[in-house]
Structures are given as C-alpha cells and as structure tokens.
Image (tube, rainbow, N blue to C red):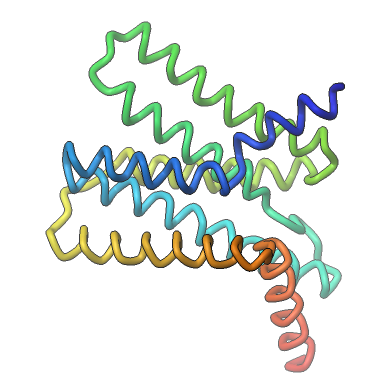
Length: 196
C-alpha cells in the first residue's frame, strides 16, 4: 500500500506530466505577458538541460569509479522547478498569508516527490538533493525574469518547442530518456578512459 502511495506521489514529478503542463503554463503566461512566458520557458529549458548534463556527468564519473552523485533526480529537479515556479506565477498579488500557504504547498509537493523517489529506491538522498538544487536554482532564474527583447522571446520559444518535440519523439518511440542519458554517460567515460 505504501509503495502505491509513493508511486502516485512520484508521478507528480514525471516529465510526462510536467512537460505538457509547462506548455499550458507558458501559453497562459504568454497571453498575459510574453516576457514572463519566455522566463518560464527559459527556466524549464535550464532545468531539463542542467539535469540531463548532471546525469550524463554522473554516469560517466560512476563508470570511472568517481561516484559522488550517480544519477541526479530528474523528478526532484522538475518538481522543484515546476511547483516553486507555479508559486511565483500564482502567488504574486495574493495577500501575504495566502502567498505563504501557496509557497509551503509548492515546497511540500517538491519535497514529497523527492522523498517518494528515495522511498521507491530509485535515488539516493544525495541524488534527490542534487535534483532539488537544480530545480530550485532554475525556479529562481524564472523568478528573476529580466525584461526580454522580442528576439530573445522568439529564440527561447523555438528552443522550448524543440525540447518538447524531442521529448514527445523519445516517448513515442518507447525510448526512455534515462537510458539515453546513461548511454551518453558511458560514451563520455569511454572517451575519457581512452585519453588517459
């Protein structure tokens, strides 16, 4: 029973859920303020990119016997970025106690997803902490959201669509991104071992 509960909580950090919801948030923000939508898309892109690079590096270092964090938790990263980012979107303008409650709920959701990954034996505490850090940093990037020029909004929008299309393509072909990233890490490790 506890396993099923943890599995259900973990699903709130899956990219299969959060990526489409991120598109919905981006569209809603674009209707309100294109610069804010670009900031959101930039945060999502940074989170996905930083997590993917951390996973590749972790797998490569693990293969070379230098394990610190083998596989940064993508669930923890995306959940932290998404839910804390939503707090910034919807918390703005709310009276102080409600904004505070929304912040606690956002952080609670991110922590629950991270803890579920450890409970399911999918990640270590270090791996979820690394993922949570990636997510929080990228959420802060969104919160900073400087004024964007029109060309920057267009560039981020195109990059965002490419990432969404790549994710949909991987999913449609039954490829798991974790396997792709692990194989990339192994290739990096092989290349580093040959250079030594």
